[in-house]
Length: 322
Length: 120
Image 1: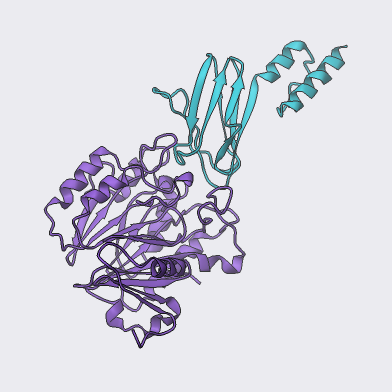
Image 2 (image 1 turned 90 degrees about the vertical axis):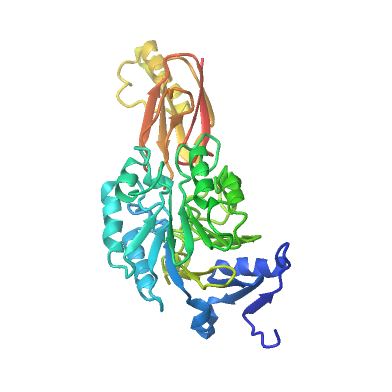
């Protein structure tokens, strides 16, 4: 601690929680680009300006992957008239990472209006990314008009029910959940009984030490229910994951980065590659936020996630497209 | 006389915020009633306005999406009384209510958005 540098925070955590002040600082930095990693109950936060000083061993590990989200192909309003350009910039960012990610997760709203040509355009652009495998979950914009039929035909091979699935990579168990179907009037995102039962069964036989990564479009924590930014039955899903020492939940939907730590669960939302949305309650509605053109790429981004075996949690790094 | 009824009808329609294109020529009491049979709901800032709309039986309600984000207009009754396709910016959906009753609806993409049409 005596060698602590200006931009670095080290916080001791008791088993029952975390240092609120440090956590809030980490939250504040998450909006501008931060690197947070927890080792044995100690949360380390670094501002992205100091990333070059962090040893590569801390950043790279057994597994590295990238999350992109909310590409909204087909959107052409003033908040971003060139979503093709910004998605390409996101791919360039991915291709420029020091360690090539093994694969990508796309956490939904691939398209803006579920049009076949919108999906085609995204598929074409992502072909130029170094990681060849992309795992998708749908956003509400991907399942318009047809209850997700087209989405499942394109991306849902091998998935269950409404498109949920799991897979394992280098000892990490990944679970893709769908919470944008059968939404009820006045409600939030929904997982539904069938999916919850599947999840309970899917994780039942895993060792408690298995790191878990859950990804879904709408946040699985209550970010701002007034704007529908939450999932009705996420508590039940998280109850099935309680026994695991390390759970990382990655979401999109809200077009801004946000992080929250609750016990062994780290929740993280990724920036959009298309347009920003306002902070909770800071505007009349969650509609697209128009920022000066020269600032747009600073509020769009990608999320880089690294798993180092033996460490308590995965390291989640947001990078803007600027 | 014929002309003044027409102007009264036009004024009433304007007060109600209703377009009268193509109907101004008839100039009869009947046409004034026809004009009353169309009402509008605007979708702005992720909300329906007005949230509750009361109309007489036979009214056609037209929803217009004025947001930069697509929305839908879907009845919450089972079975659904009406269901729009996805409405992109400035797109419209109309439905004619032929029976009295209360018709709750929502945006199936943003379910926090709810409204109702009360038909009397």
